[in-house]
Length: 239
Image (cartoon, rainbow, N blue to C red; front, side, top):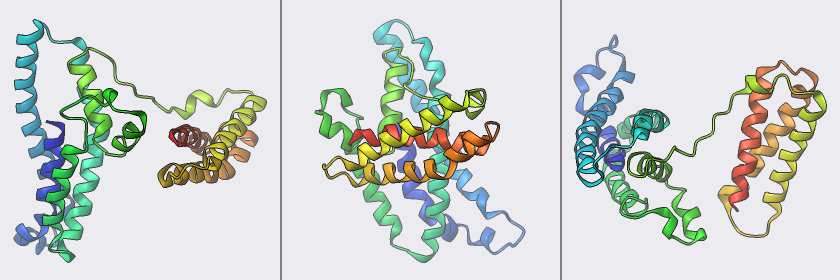
């Protein structure tokens, strides 16, 4: 069901502009609305499939886990990603006509490269890291845990306002700690270009925002930048 949403976006978005020439030629028509049509259609199909899934789960388990109510929270970032992807493909489809065939093939590959038919926990650590590169892998795993196993999704919320009261010394120390994590991850000799890029981005953010976060504790821009940097430094440790 999760894969079906991105499959709809990949197969339908590239032809949006060409299939709606009458709307495109009208200057007053907001073209950015067109991808929303595909998103809402994908959400409707998801809702139908999800209701059927809940029926099967109730038959098998005799109950529906309460954590199923967390599905909207799990899907929120996924829907935003799909919306951005739809806008991008709709724009590219005007100039690259063959992108629709390529995106259809990509949709099929994503199905087999995501933990839809199996749990990611049964794979070796090396393969788990590769599978998690797939943008839908995390969403699939979180949805499965919430709907079938009754577990809360393993999400983290970065709220910069919670760090403004930290003493200056702790702000500086935690910032340096994040910097050390990023440097250590980057210096590991294993070849992992994605983690290397994430570590470098973390170092760039730390260099930009750490002095400001220490000098001006109430700066939300600096605090937010440092939270993102610390998060990226932790992710780079996947290497």
